[in-house]
Length: 377
Image (cartoon, rainbow, N blue to C red):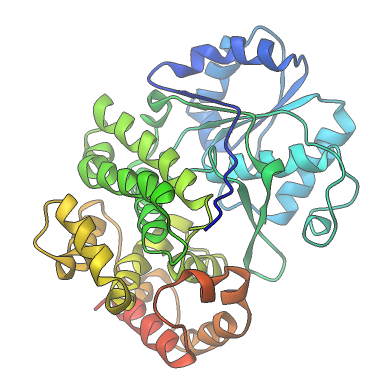
């Protein structure tokens, strides 16, 4: 297998890492950045903290929350194009980071977001600095950006030009993260690591990052949500970044993210919550095709055998206060069959699942998996 992997030119990690922002701006030789920040981060004072540490004045684009939408991305793109900015700094959760990535890309290229799927991007993007305030999406390290489009589904823009120039991961910034957000983002990191590990395109290279991410989540997730002690926050911030690396190799993510990004936008389910309701059943779905790999992983995690993993994942999801079934998230049972058809006919190919997901995806197997996720059994 040939492994192609793109990473930020500079990765700055650790408590207090935000203090390096001045050095970063000098290194990139930028003077007029647009700061993209969601409302929650701004209300928590983290945007102001960033501005205080910067040696120059910067305009802030804010006034948004929730999932990243096409309309939001379009607004930020227009702002960057019209404002004469020379760089983008995105601070926040995965939504803010993904929107910042796309804005930097379209600032220097003609057309709209949809054109990124059908035409070659001619020019390099504006320099982009990504600063996560949650430990989950791994967007600061990944080569993709996800948006909710007008068809009600999430779609990804991928490529080397989507990768951050600089990622600043300061675990202190996640301290103000609400428990529910910390839980759902942490589960996202855990599942991303698991999905990359179970991929048919996994390699020793991706396994290094995926297994480390899973181990860190098992060790620190619950404490990061309930206690928010510095060691746990640091551990989860690292887990999120490592999961982002693992998923940016050919290993990618599997049926779990495909379902979550198909159902979540349609029923207004935050991404991490949707993942939480699918992840344990994804492991059961793929069990027969991944027994040996799961056996190696569960032994590293100190568990009895591969059959112990799915129950343990359900226990973790419950321990951090999330549901393990879709029926409590507003997904009607009658939507399952339609969702299975959408995934079987088109979405599985967008996610390259025939090459990635270990267990064969048929309409029948999808219906059984979705039924299990809905019931929570």
